[in-house]
Amino acid sequence: MQEFWFYIELGLDHVLDFSAYDHILFLAALALPFTFREWKKVVILATVFTVAHCLSLALSVYETVTVAVNWIEFLIPVTIFLTALFNLFYVKRGTKVGKAGVHLWATAFFGLIHGFGFSNYFKMLMAEEENKGLPLLGFATGIELSQVLIILLILALAYVLQSIVKVKQAVFIVLFSIIVMIMTIPMMVSTFPL
Figure 1 (tube, rainbow, N blue to C red):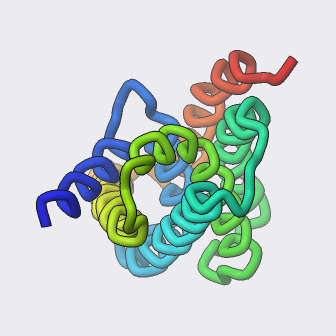
Figure 2 (cartoon, rainbow, N blue to C red):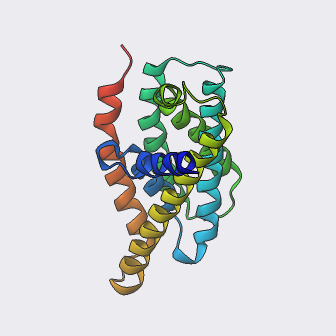
């Protein structure tokens, strides 16, 4: 049981690590178009992301799929940038994100990419493990708990700014999506595969 908690903590640390804030930026971009009343939709998207993230980890740990790390490291900030960019298109069109189709599939695909980005480190941690299922489950639990926490914080911030400060939702989405995009550009430049 202690080992299971270790992997839960690892999942929590993986997402909540402010020195590697790519995960937080992705979750922020994912949650921005939603209101606090729509929290269930965002949590479903986060769960899809977690499942895809852990699927790519499992594929890597069991050596079913291997990918070039330099491309994955570059694609992670690209997925964040694209998620924030999608938000701008939603605002421009005046449509709600609630119709999940493309958003759901994009989130799953982005989860796969993010999982492969962490796979080498995770494989090293699990090298001595005979049973790899329990650590993967613990890690997934930690990821999910931390993602829900971040999403609820973003939605709470949106609620405060939109309901109390009276910032229009479209302005909130555009402003914070642009901030996410600006923060992501240096990550894309520094990880661009040469």
